[in-house]
Figure (cartoon, rainbow, N blue to C red):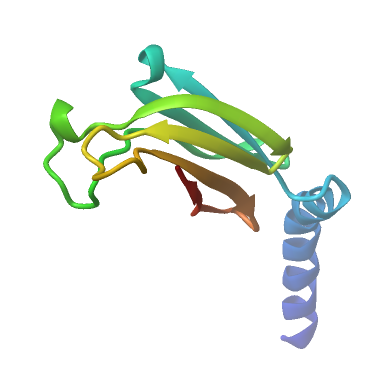
Amino acid sequence: MVKRFMIALATTVALVGPAAAQDRLYGGCDLEIDILEEGAKLHVLERCAGVKTYHEDWDFYHPRGSPKTKEYHCKILGVERLDRMSVNVTTYCPAKQGNNKRSVLNIQSTDRTITINNVENY
């Protein structure tokens, strides 16, 4: 029984091992970001070891939890690639109060997890 378990474990490692090794070899995942519909949406695609692990189109609204209407919709002004797993996205949100209507958001792919951080408001 132990011998069968070891064979099954070795087979599992052999099947899973190459993808994990490729992730380590190439430094993780690739994050592809594109602006769609004249700044209305952000297209987010993550590939790990050549396999799509995340693929969605994002809308941004301000403030958080606001109605999904044109009044609260933020426009994407630009995308700046920092490296293959990180980009900065500049948005303009007309519903923000005062002069801080623009934000820079950092989007990163780490260990097959996508995170968004607010970097700057101006």
